[in-house]
Length: 193
Image 1 (cartoon, rainbow, N blue to C red):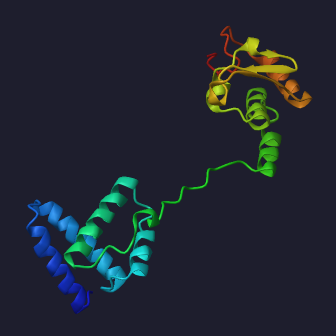
Image 2 (cartoon, rainbow, N blue to C red; image 1 turned 120 degrees about the vertical axis):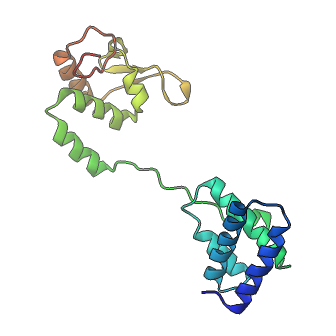
Image 3 (cartoon, helix red, strand yellow; image 1 turned 180 degrees about the horizontal axis):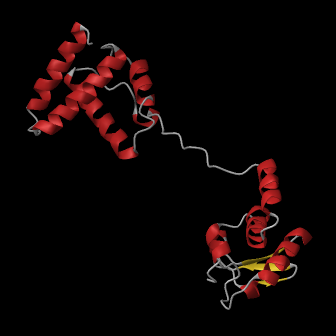
């Protein structure tokens, strides 16, 4: 529920946006956005309330978030209150941490798949060299010359040759003994490609 002050601000905003020539759906969305802010802030137009409200918008996409900011600025204009946040002070959307595999998790994974030559060789290369899926998928049989492997599509587009540790060489050797394919691709699926 809104306080009297908040209801008065909302009514004033409704009158203001009525003069902008917006369609009914847009007017409804503008009013809904202003109402959500007023419910959050208790009708207060203070900087701290605006910052707090903006923090609740973290889950929104960038476009939707910018639209809400635009509506709130129009709302503040209609209330004859200066927008309290300067351009450089806008809270930035935090980026989610990139998922990664921890050392103990990678060791456990490698122990679990050690009996599968394909998986073990793939994951050894991915973990030890930090290869991406596309790099692994594009490796050719001729790229592996023990103890070296040629990475033709490395990060940044640069090709490079890396020396492998004995365990990874052994994993690749075991895989190549059981690999049954005529394709030049180093790693093939069960269908042979």
